[in-house]
Image (cartoon, rainbow, N blue to C red; front, side):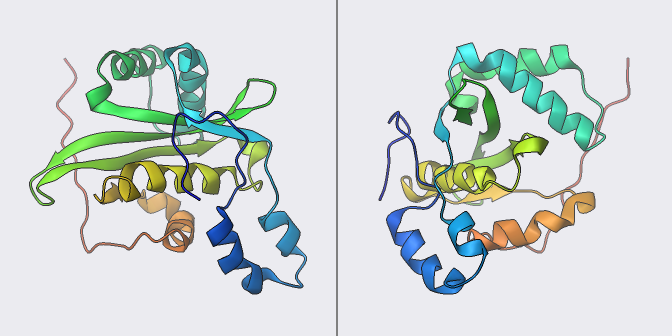
Length: 190
């Protein structure tokens, strides 16, 4: 079951095909009903009106990972993404009460290695109190469907060395680790 990003409907966490594949694995276990439950969120493309909640979620994520951040700079970066869609896209998990449960941000990277513009999954975050409801899996599945399967191009991501526990999550969704390390140069403060 392939869905368009623009569809506005409640999504089952797994497509019918995925549910059939997983059913034998979780049959007759306590987790079987939880893993295939319908989560009361709508996975959709974010719109500019979501910006305040996107900034809130990104700030929560940065604080949780103990990364330095400026809410003002994040707000400006979010605004720039909506002003220049070629930079990337946000997907959101929207609860029925219109509160965003989580987000995924895919930046677009024009890659010589892949000879194409590919998606770089830069952010995937779910509110701490809503974790364990498969919202992150729903967001990631939608990212894969919309930015890899639909285009036939790969998606890359990076995992912080202090956040290795999520490696199995990405492996379960078809990602493979590459033998690389990513480095960064930060210019001195002025």
